[in-house]
Length: 626
Image (cartoon, rainbow, N blue to C red; front, side):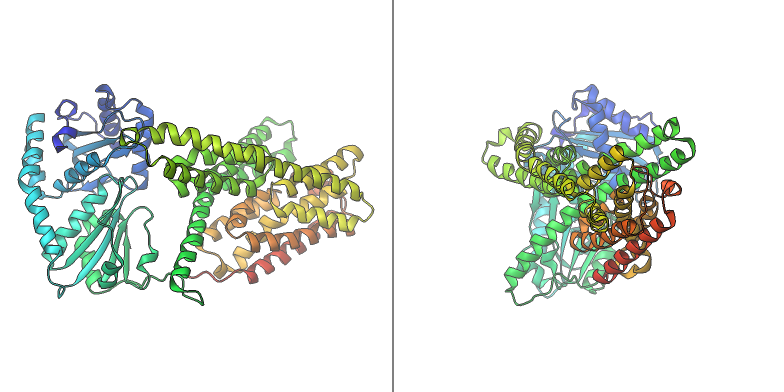
């Protein structure tokens, strides 16, 4: 396929009317919709803006290449547009953009289109070619310019590059990986820029491109072993374990386009840290690498879910805490309290779906997002808690991976149906099947069994029961253990008016977030910067009886966080009963303590449990290494 087949002259805009980045994007999108290149303006615009949010597609030198790959595209196309006055497009060099290429690629697109787009991207790296583009006045001039360049320069250039890469081994040899989030334009522009600069500097280079159609020119173990250093110019995840023991320079893909000389100079001087993978042990090297890749990937997938969940935890938690403040002053009938409480609660309803959805997306890319989020919603609705959500997220991700394997033998003509029909329908069906008939009933049944067990205990030994209820609040922070303890205490409180067990439950639920906040303050070397920042918000959530603030920490490090939390929460719950403390309210945390019986003893129980958990967690966790 020729470049001019995608660079259609009928959709070009030779005189943009827009004066800012947002409006120029909208003007180009509306033209694509006018000529039926896309079928949904909002969906395509969202994809374009999501790409811009990751890093600006203003490349510098007056060029911008906004692009998206989405099911809202009917056919692949490139819209060329010019602005004589120039537009502030947040370009890498800070200069106005005059030439725009909006690339629209449908999901499931074949390799031919992507290779053509790669060729187009590389042409824009030629300064003389850009000058000719600026001088072009008609769509016919632009199209002919691309056609001439593609025919005259590309074959010769490819031959030169092949000969260059196979030249003498006496010169420095560098390997590189280029990748951008969509894998359409920047990936190949960085590849081309690195190759051309390496040629000028008399350096041999091999570049692997992680484009939308997969990895091309993949680096072999021999390539990596021979290389002086490795350049990773990528704005998305790439396989890193293979570079263990090599000097690795990690930069955004934009640096691969604009800072090639700097990167190559650092590479040949080995001016970069040595990448350290997992060290070997008694296992064989292959077994160790396999183990590292499996557990490393599980951790990466988990952290993808947690990082996307954090804003919901923090935003919803703080808003709910503020609502309790208004409730304590204005009462539960206050409209301000109702608004803030509903707002924060609505954010909290997304916690488990977001966690599960982005775990699945990390495993199976975009096709895993929808079934993963539904799995999380089913876990939430069945009281399976964040543990059920974790299971659901991994389940959905690997179901979609399995579907990709099953459907890979289908004819290429059906590739477009996979992301818009086959993966969503079958992924949702099989994920829902497992969640609805297996995972949901298991957790729901567990919840019922525990409530029955607690009712059988009665209140004869109050201290033991208080410790049990407090510990259960910290086990799964919203799951069946937590719900069983809370439901049991609410039942006792509503039927008898005795709030003693509510004190045990509230103390147990407040300990995990408060202890994490204290631990991140006292043991700074045991938490990374992001954890320390989010740990501060747990002071507010903990004091407000919002246990969910601890969920991101528990999901990332379940053994240590849950283990230490259960100990402290159980002690706090038992102490409330030992000192005969009672709270006549089902929620509110610190805001309802003035209503308590024995409020000072309740606070003392809470402080003791919090400090014990914080100390255990602080000593138990490993020191963070950069």
